[in-house]
Length: 397
Image (cartoon, rainbow, N blue to C red; front, top):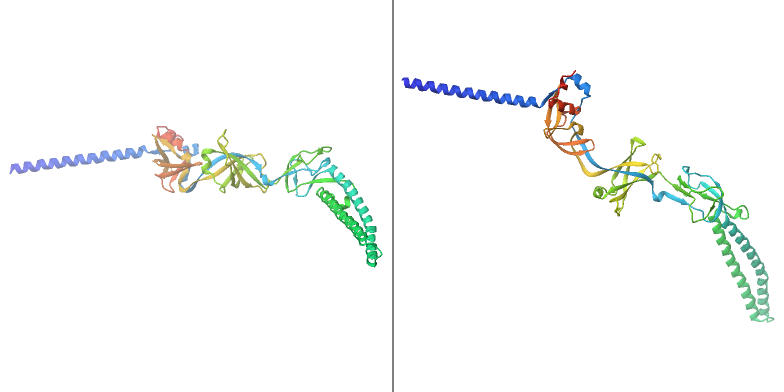
């Protein structure tokens, strides 16, 4: 009997000891969890948050599109540029347009004394006099041919006399037609010079006119200058559409394709964006810079983009997806890990480890560790990191 009691007591003590060790282990484990949880938490008073300008924004699913950023200059489109040259030699008498002037198609840019037109008028007058002389010769030749025909018909004259006189008549008629063609050719040249039939004999001034509506971007004429067809006097460009031309590095050409959108900004209008499209990619690589020329066609209805203006060009690449993203400034590195700070209470923040993905502009994709809608510190995260590392800013009022 005593043996049974002793055995019972030993078992009781053993069970009690085991329970005691189990409870102690649970307490130690709970204490470690609380310690770990507190190690990831940062306290900061409201006044301290206001002092550093701490900002909270909810994590959102956003459209992330990666852009290739290049620089370029504004240039006129080749097919919208016209060189205005005289058709003949002459001397400039009056200049009516200067660089920067906006002109309409057909507007007179300058007038000049057309030397060649004067020579053509002299030729025309001489040709017309010859024509009148031939017409005068035709009258007796026609009469002679008629008389020879009548005499031959009654046997009073030889047939060969009629044939000879008829041949003379035909020759004169042929000469008249040839002379009329010469005069018409002279008239055509004069019309190209702007000289109409009713102005022949007067002052032979020829006008240089704008072939299209646009802006005069070059003018090389002054009164008294002698000009000819070999030298353009004006250059007119229609700038309602322009090229924004960039040099893209060889390694980035695979990200660019004809027809894709392009977003243009210039320092002159920092809050304005101009949309265009890629119209041309050069097939030639510059061996010195290892770049290729890329041109973007951009509408310019308000003429805000000026030639040779510097421009920034954003070209969307093939990377485009919807994902949870936060401002890159929200991400901090703590002990080699990427973390963001989540607001748990008005004065308490959790340092949450996350896996980051692609950075696009000022946004960074969050692959895991963060849910949409969670309040993330987007400004002031560095101060929270400093407190987490042992600072005391959270106590400052």
